Length: 110
Length: 113
Image 1 (cartoon, rainbow over the protein chains, first blue to last red):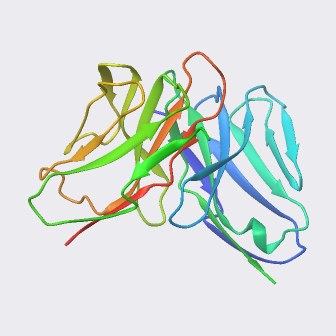
Image 2: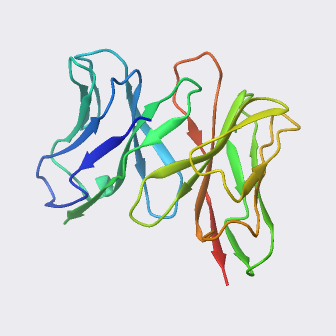
C-alpha cells in the first residue's frame, strides 16, 4: 500500500516568513492533493497535481510535484495568521480513495 | 447550495452501544467515502462506495458497517466491536471518472463515555 510521509510534523513561524511543507511517497504518485484543515472541521481543497514537474499557485501558496512524481512540496510566501491550520497531502488510489500523510500543524505568530 | 452534510456534529456513545453517523450529499457524486482521524494523525479510510448498493472495505473497516441504498446517502455505523471508537469522522464524495478533488463534510466527533 502507498505511504505518505509529511515533514515537518509541526511548524511555528513569525508572520511574514516563508515556509515549506514536504510530502514524500513510497510509490509513484498519480494524483497528489493538498488540503487544509482547521481543528475540528472538514478539509478544504487547496490544489491537485498530476504531472511530473507540475507547479500550481493560488494566492500565496505554491505546490510542486517533482519530475519523478514521488515528492511534493507546499510553499507559503509571506505567511499570515489566516494560513494557520493543519496541512495534509493525499494520494489518490484507483477508486479515487485518498491515502493521507500525517499532517503538518502550522502556527503563524502575529 | 451543494455540499456534504454530516450529522450530528458531536455524538456521545456508551460502551457497548452501536451508533450511526449520517452523511448526505446533494452534489450528484457517485463515490462516497468515510475516513477516521485521530489526534495528531492524518485520515485513514474506513469504507468507500463507488455506486449504489456496493461498497468496499478500506484500511480500518473492522468494527464498522455501512450501507448505500441511495446515491445521496452513505451512513456509517460504529458497532460495539470497534474497540477504540473515539475519533473524528469525516465523510467525502467525488464524481466517478473525473479528476477532481474530493469534497468533505464538516465531520462528526464521536466520544465514548
